[in-house]
Image (cartoon, rainbow, N blue to C red; front, side, top):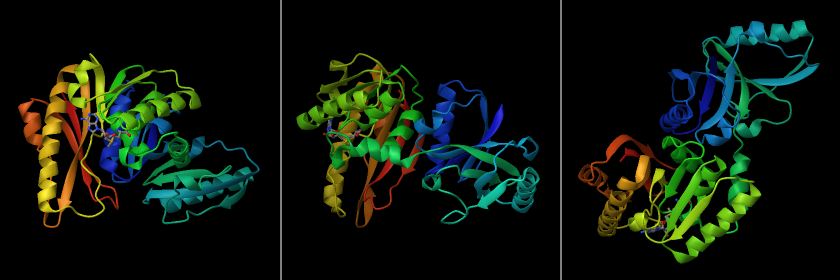
Length: 352
Ligand SMILES: C[S@@+](CC[C@H](N)C(=O)[O-])C[C@H]1O[C@@H](n2cnc3c(N)ncnc32)[C@H](O)[C@@H]1O
């Protein structure tokens, strides 16, 4: 097994769980050796390059090496360091300097624009990044490409910013479910189809249900476009209907992954009465939906529930009571916050 440093984006706890589930479901032999808020040091066999496009919460992956085994034969190189734990940094820097001196390589050293680490958007041309984590030295081999997400979102034929889950979150949710290639995933509140689109891209077959007719048509248009534009082989089917009646349309699926209806969109805090009313409506909707999903899901349900703030407190759908009544087990629960969003979210990893 080789050691790799996975550089985690924001929400490191969720990103670490995502890595574990992803590697587990694809039957990688692996061990998380160390982790903190910035990185995970992972021992793993035969890592495939596609992992960086599949993971939503990992920014970069660097392969740990011993300086004795370094083999760079170039006349000139441009390199820089990202430091995630600096116990051995001076020694490591000097060793590298000596290595390139011995090789007679002309060296240009680049510094990160901000802080001590390079962000994915700073990787251009032949730049080589060395990652330093305490006494570990690693060379970055895979970098996430934030532009890819923009390409997928901006070119969609049908877009409705109120009915779309972000691509980054979507990938995380899909991976938390442990679904793998050629299995089936249902999004019972599929909106404009982001979760289904990313599932297709990862080689997963998708089912969707959407109640609003216009959004349902938009979702089909998007997914047909997506299949062609990204040369996707897997299949999807979308139904116009109600998530609470999912078994009318679909028999069984491997996993359910959804960001359901979270209540109306607010520009400012609702009143306590409004928040309580939404909480009660969502509690009923989520109970009826999860009751329906329980019998038809083979592996896991990933479900988001909102935290609705008002001036002096907050209201949340009664997930604990719903799940205990339905005897659905909570494997994990994460708080997910986005700066500037009024509503925070809780991500539930459930086994039906
Ligand atoms: C947050 S959006 C979903 C975003 C979607 N998961 C994605 O991947 O982009 C919620 C969607 O649920 C739909 N919806 C609301 N109530 C529903 C119900 N009872 N059954 C099915 N869809 C419903 C809304 O019209 C909306 O499009």
